Length: 391
Image 1 (tube, rainbow, N blue to C red):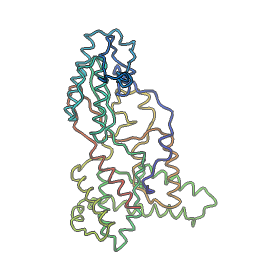
Image 2: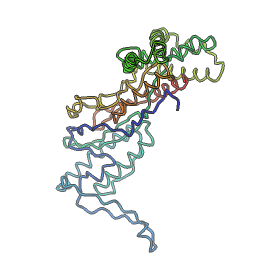
Image 3: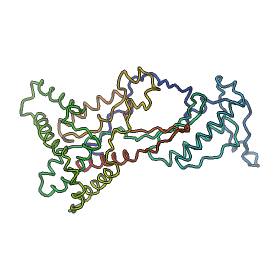
Image 4: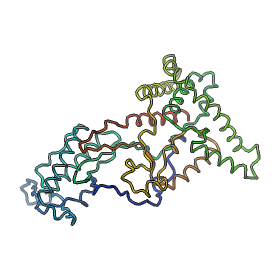
């Protein structure tokens, strides 16, 4: 793995103290993997299922439905209420399968609650294999209604997407790579101006303050003089960063983007890779001319703040926000880079989750959004490839 695309320390193992569990206004959530814990219990005996094997070993080869614990909360439910639950379940299911184009297993021959349990398992299995960026599905009971809520989420893989600008600066000054540099400059301008990727020389970016902190540390260190390599690296990051910031922010790079693609003639494999990346970026820009990388992100990953506990939602940030792990920065080499990575990893180790693009779709009879995470999937692929080319 290249140095710019970094795994975030021990990110996946370190956990912050968890906040209180979200308290939605719904009466309950039944996830696919929680079916055995919370069932709308049925006192009737399940239908027996035999293996059809006629040998004396048949018992060992027989598949039995799992025994479910009856929940006291629902032990009083009569057939009328169960019928209402099943009606709501299958009505919502019909909306879901129409939206995603799947063919669920027929479960009408099974008694309640096995019909719902089996159907949930099958739907989850199909959606996981068919839908890109599939996350999970919930079965919600709210105000005497039963319906599905599906979640799609792009998995960033606990990865830092830090794009170095000094390599681009060097390409633009290299006679043999200038045209390639101009092509990638258009890519970076799109990422900055349209996709809203933060730039480290701007005060509202997260990395700006980390560079400032490193500068203060060096100034307070009496053993570090003005000729120390770390100070020179910081000066380089500041000066070139300001120069490239102006170039990347120039909107003319977008106006010339298509023309640069048409006139570009790759000289070697590197040029060809840069051309293919620029072509992907231009196509994404043309299909999503105003889309930001933050368009499907939510504070603390809470999609519906009105259903979240107020203390959990408003008190503090409990996740790594996307602007902290996606950014332009100086370079992926040197002492300053090493210290920068240490600072970032130490901070991120305090969190247990990262902000990621996500979409929720509710199948309760209201209009279902046809949004997806196609833009995010392609954009993160471009970021990953650009980081690789600059390293």
